[in-house]
Length: 617
Image 1 (cartoon, rainbow, N blue to C red):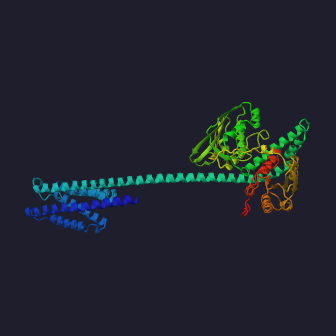
Image 2: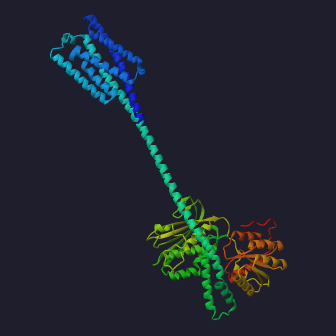
Image 3: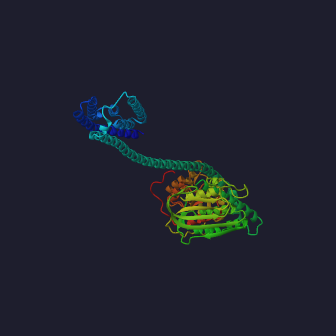
């Protein structure tokens, strides 16, 4: 707005400057004509007025911008009216009075605006009316013969110069105005382009702010979900530890009793039922530990195709098919699939949960497609979380089921969230276990679902260049020959000590038990044992890591196995770093503990670390 006002001010100032120059030029011509007439017809008063006006115009033009704009403009318009009036009084209608009045009106409009132009028109009309009335009534008369005036060369010269001046003034004013208007239009165009750029920039900034706000909201939601999972996980970990201790009676004792009963004993069937119930309860405990993100700590190179094949040949899948006879499964496994680093047990549970969830989503039957592939993925935002760039082994499980409503996509992976009928299928932990396992494997989850058409779960696991190692199974190790080796069991829970001792005694080992780390150190200081079985978490007093450290000071080559109702932890790995063997999770199964003990006793003595022991976790 200010720029436009400055432009118009410059336009009026330029028009005024050119007007003064025009007046000075025209005035010189008028002056010369007046002087020539003075020598031919005699001196007249109007000639003195012309000379005075010319000098005034010349002085104003010379002073230029040193005079205020309004003063210069007033001088020009005033001189124009004076000359117009004298022209009318002297020459009447045959002179330049009327064109001069018209030029004054145009100039007043250009210099001062439409209001000044309107006033000038009113004054001009009044002047013409008064002078015309005086001539009509005979009060005024021309001092010369109009016919002689018309035939005079000087008269025509004066009229010609006047018309040229008036026409030139109009052309000059309008031309200047047009140029300034074009300049103003160009300025407005540039301004408009700048404003368009600013609008685009503001839109970009608004879009960026909206994106940042969406990311902040998404991060807040993820933070809240992570906090909920952490709270539930903390609770689950404590519950899992207590349940593992309780499950001794329903898992370990039936295992022990079944080894002592003949194959045709009527007690075998109820004991098998008790054991199966205990195994199911132990599986739920493992789900709780996975939910607590404290379960997957030991990784190995494996091929996901092998895990999938193991599941589809398992009794669990056969049982699922019996519940869902209309279920069709199609496998599309990449034969060139690279390996990944992970836990085969937990990945098998992931496959089982995804397939089971797909079957539950198709109560009237349908098709489940399980596919694997390898690919390099660019960073992208998924429906559940952002998938970072990397080389991945990709697992997809698709179904043609009822789909997941959009509002439930953000909740489907939360613990205990389920739309199933309570007590009929699942515990609400299946998808949360999938999420926890994928996160433990440093992977990502994406979900695509259309209500009424089906759902696709896509899991991304980082690939590894490691080869799958041939590992001797624990069951094979359990078949090793018992040589009556001595074993010391260290556990603060009496029931755990007793069942472990009975299992190992049943296998032919010589077993002793103590209730604390301090008792174990005292025992080892007096007697040597072939193997130490130490519970990692004992209260009060020393835990398993501190106990093993002190034992190594007395027996540097001491073999050991670590056990716990919790999942494998950092302190367990530190104990293994000192030389301990396998980690055995409670509750004890006969074949598991037998295999771990046999494998550790048959293992060659590994060098123990003689430097400083690792600090506390």
